[in-house]
Each structure stands twice: as C-alpha cells, then as structure tokens.
Image 1: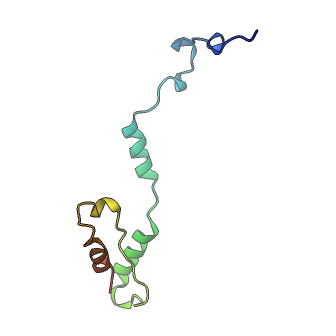
Image 2 (image 1 turned 90 degrees about the horizontal axis):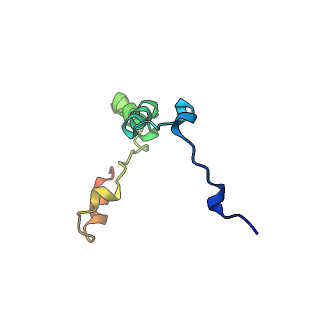
Length: 90
C-alpha cells in the first residue's frame, strides 16, 4: 500500500532555516530596486535625441506616443479611432 502525500510532509521549525530564507523583502523595496536598475526605453532615448537635435532631426523619423488602453478607457468607442489619429504626428 502506498503512503499518502500527507505522510511525506515534514514540519520544519523557523530556527532550523538559514537567515536568508526566512523572509522575503517587502514589495516596495523590490519595486525601488527594479526602478533603479530599469534601463531607459528606446522611445525615451529617441525623444531626448529629438529634443537636442530640434531642427536637424530628419523629417522621415516620426516618434509616435505610446497610447495605452487605460488612457482611453473613458472615451466613447466611436471617438477613439479619431482621437488616436489626432495624437499621431502629422
């Protein structure tokens, strides 16, 4: 007869665990660490270059803003396509 899964479970006391495995860091610390190591996006660096170059920026290189669904969730469905078209560079 096979033993059940409950038989394999062993309760381990906290004192027997190594210090580093006892606690996970708080989420806000993890988020701050991720922000510090985040690299700039390609669109962000291109926008900076465009601001610096101003008049010498080639006309055929257009940078369109990133529009998320959340930004337009309160806009009526019939107006959304026209609004997206207006937000693009001409």
